[in-house]
Length: 344
Image (cartoon, rainbow, N blue to C red):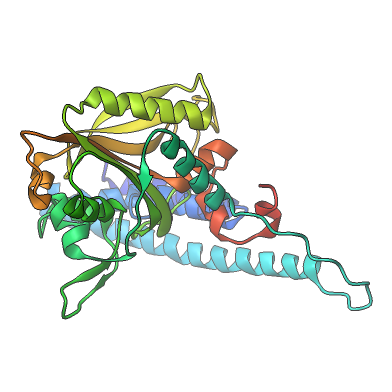
């Protein structure tokens, strides 16, 4: 059975072995995610104990909590040891010798994320879109309510972030650049064709997610716009960004502000579709979400849904950069290691 003490013991042993075998912080965090992180195997067992009998619940819960506590303790010890070893190694390599002649500073260049952002913007400019910006600290109304996320809507949990109470109403570090779409539609009559680039913030961190990352979202509203227009635009964007011949697929999905909605995937460039830890052995990587604008959203900005239709899409800039350059860990972009950044 999925939640037996025997299975928990096996997961505990496997987790300890994975932590012991980790050679660096990235592999250590990967092991944590598989076994006792927020979506790890032991955490999933704890989420499902409500379906067990009272006696089984007590035994399984106690065993799972003991296993997770032990794994977390070993994780903390291994993390401290790995970081200390990296510090010693770094100091050994970078120790300053004042007797050596001075070195001229190498010229800098744009960060790979800035390069990728500029390239995405350039593609959509050529496809007829203008660029709009907005505040990083946003009102709850623009970040959620006007995008069809009413209070207590469960979809808000997927974008859990940082809130600030104020006299003007609740403020939030924006979780997407979609608020720019609402602000633009409030002051612009159709036709509308914009992209909204910028930094966004969410409570999420692993090898493919970061608490702060960058998005480019797009919006087109006019008479007679269809899902076919959206698919054609995104197919052309992927061809211009990744080159011809890259397999692409559209999967049905759900977003509160679009209906119908789709996830767009591209074949994993790390394993070329064979399956790896980056694509979670699926052979595909999600690059963006998209869909037709829900008529409810038009109600917030005064557009007549009987007259106008539109589509919206959003992509993570870091995800596009990882695909273009074959990078398997998003955290490399933010560690400021010149040996990594100088490759771009």
